[in-house]
Image (spheres, rainbow, N blue to C red):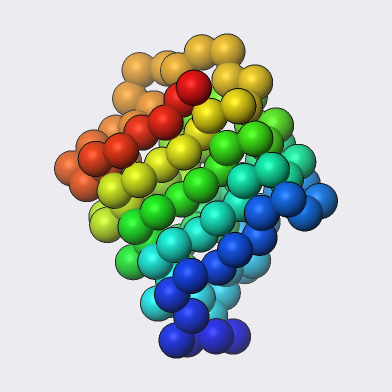
Amino acid sequence: LLPNLISLHLQHNSIRELAEGDMAGAEGLRWLYLAGNAIRRIAPRALAPAKMLEKLHLEGNRLEEVPTASLRGLPALSELKLSHNPIKRVGDGAFLPVASSLQHLYLN
């Protein structure tokens, strides 16, 4: 529980998934850096407590699809990095939950 935390750097660890409740108490979080982990799955409500999230860096993980359900409830998300994941297909509406706020999208 870190209510004043605005930036969380967890790059290059061994995180495999983000489960519901993992971000509890991070209501003020604006920047979340999770690059270079082994994330395969993000639960639909895992990021829900971080409603003010502006930057989400998920590059270099093992995501096989865009975590669309996890993006719901993030009205301030302006930057999303998904580069270097084994994403094979981007489905219709994949970024619809953040369509009104997203300004920078990385899918290299």
